Image (cartoon, rainbow, N blue to C red; front, side, top):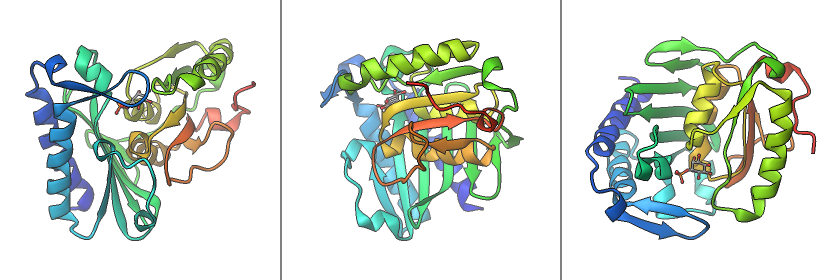
Length: 259
Ligand code: IPD
């Protein structure tokens, strides 16, 4: 079985743990930052993923949200490194506001190589491998060719960083006037998949962990999207970053936020 398919199979198993969850509120703790929660299921899914993925690729290193790897280590730049968000959309998970997804990115020599994002609530699997295209439940996907003015956009509110709220919403106001409307899904990985499928035309968030965007970035880029930080600089995949991602159609315009 190809590596990407093996990772997909593991993501489906992780999804079963998410679907089995009950009494989530009671199993929730608060992390540092504003309203930043972790449940016992985030930890359980991460433990499962680390063990299962290590069997597939024993030489890989691991970056996981729930081990708190805020700083990037040099070892992630060499060979394989899994970058994992066991449950992206933890607040959605706690509140039963769907979806929440498992997000598994794989870096090869520090560059995005494979991305798998699985939504167990709807049984939707997005996956991509560099140079081989992007797929939704096995069917090739492409981003939208429509211009910004005929697109909806999504944004993440960078909820854990209150110092970014004013700038986040200033940019949202600008894009609201340049597009049809705005959406907020509650998971960055899913936002990137919606962009990759041609549902939205632009997505941005002012600060994300590497685990929030690595898998979705491979899926979006392989579907024709262009990803940078919010100022238009290339993403470096070496720690937290802002992300501005656009469809192939929007990429032909001057789409940077006017601030
Ligand atoms: C969060 C989600 C959310 C985004 C936050 C992320 P988490 O991830 O992706 O959409 O706005 O910035 O941290 O904490 O649910 O894994």
